[in-house]
Length: 546
Image 1 (tube, rainbow, N blue to C red):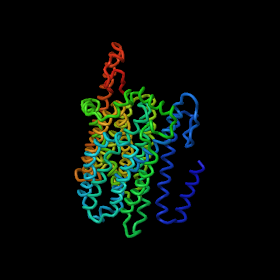
Image 2: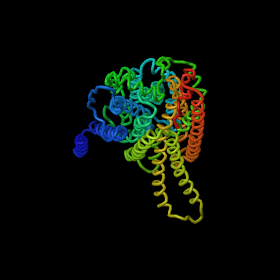
Image 3: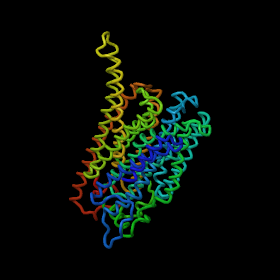
């Protein structure tokens, strides 16, 4: 706590003393990092118990069987922060074009709204081709090599945007950015599933997905500070946004080579007994196969079996619907805030609160979901919040449009217009919370119910490809197809998509419940030894997470 108090005092003194603009850039990043760590620490303390604080000191060696709290605490200290930072930097470098747009990118490169949407689309297309092979090759190459390498490469591609002088250069950078980022999300999810059993996965997923929601807050604060560097070295403020943020990715990518272990078997921070405990727990929970060779090979039969699983496709369609909404928010949330009457740095800063609310609620929901093993209920809750938020935005705009047509207005429209901005901003908080809260629940649900590793990798890759296809649609939904400030067609579409997500979650929930009931009946008629091997999640002894 003393460390955090010193940081707060340093920030206050820095701004009061008008330190140099580069110094002012660093402080918001430090504060956001401290906040993210404190939120994660409090959440993980709840899972370890009140008497098991998360500390950076090495836990004492013990004789006899290792205790679970010590083992998971070590993983939470070594694995989770690294994955969280990688995902935060990925989300930051993908979506910071929205902040750069507010800082003058579109004007400097003389882009139309249509060209801006095309630049976003160019980023999404290579994702479709990179996600599937990256997911299958992750374990073969080694996540300890592949994930840091991707971070360095996307940092280079993102930073190059700060040196472009025309629209063609921007398109080229966006294409290579999408190509090298394509496997990072399914890669991190798969990586976490190598270390955490199914009943402990969603809270960890929510923590690293919270970094995506915090990116909205982080990017707004950081972009507002970096924009003050406008003119330094002859570069505009929007160029420095790309350069400074990509530098962080490159540096952390290099550091990650020394932080990430390849698997539990090679984790240097675990004792031999602790490695055995982790592997045994993963096998008992169905997160890893009893036969190690089954998880090690890339089997095309498992790819086909994943594609034949109904629950994979229920969540894949949800991935498309949710991906459309999430990418629309990530790319256009600063623009939506600006359409409410905020300008410049004020618009950057007002894009922060919705993501802060999202972070807290997503972590609380993930804790409850892990405790009671109910993924579907969490997904239904947040999808319902999307319905409420988009309905608030559309309904209020529609009411104002209707009243404006009356011969005798019922309200003072000066007051109504002001109130409209408040209501629409509140709706923004609600649907941002719904979108970024549903994502970790849906992704965890997919990972929990697919086994062995090749089948899980395929299911996550299919889901991610679908979400990226939704991202392509999103680049046009809040642009040429549905112009601001009301975004009428987009809001109607998002309401329908959110309702569809709720319905599909319910259908998937009922399907998995029925499958579990049939498996229970089968277990009463046979023993595990009577069952053929290699069934993965279709085994009668594999219980689907609801």
